[in-house]
Image (cartoon, rainbow, N blue to C red; front, side, top):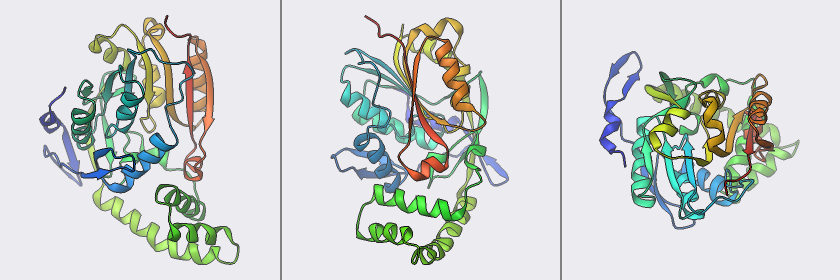
Length: 314
């Protein structure tokens, strides 16, 4: 298990300056299923709970995993998927990868407590060994990315506000969010709701500008990670890397494809990326299927889940 203090090795750029501080963020949150985790904020913890434990995102593999499955969690964030995977496949060996030091700290804490057998590495995966600069907002860690352009889509504020209200109701269902959701769907009350949302969205934009940081983080290829893991095969690779998903596949050496059984990948479908990734996987012998998201806010961001599987190992 990697040490928490390793996060101090990363370089942080905040505004125009540069230093080597590690800002430890996070709070302890208990989820509805009783699981207690460290998280940057309670809202993100509830979002992860909804996506992974309620909607089983990334869990619907096309072939059953063996009892001793090897799972790579690429873009692990704080480790909720790693924990859920260990609960579903108790004999699995989990390798979790997270390059951003704030998230790596929380990931290490969570897996030390809940998946002590896991291997946690402070590195991102990509097309080649490199250093990448990540934009990071501690209030919105889901958008932490070395490719922030994937979030700069031409989305109207009206559509984004309406979709955000839907997301809030999914994550924190209650009378208030239900009323907002009903109001935004009625032509007569919709303009009022949108008028109320404008200052909220403006405040969120300002907050992001104030708290945005940039981290220079190490990147290695999936093939290099596989070699360092000592595993002969990987049964499932989950990839959620906010715009770098195509690069992760590009970092697989020709001889290593046969060592990987299944993929489940969040894809930002920009400039034909989803079709290119599906074609690459099919060419390597995988059967591919695409699952659109049911969340309006994620549809606006052009997100889909790509599943790819080859025949399971005996």
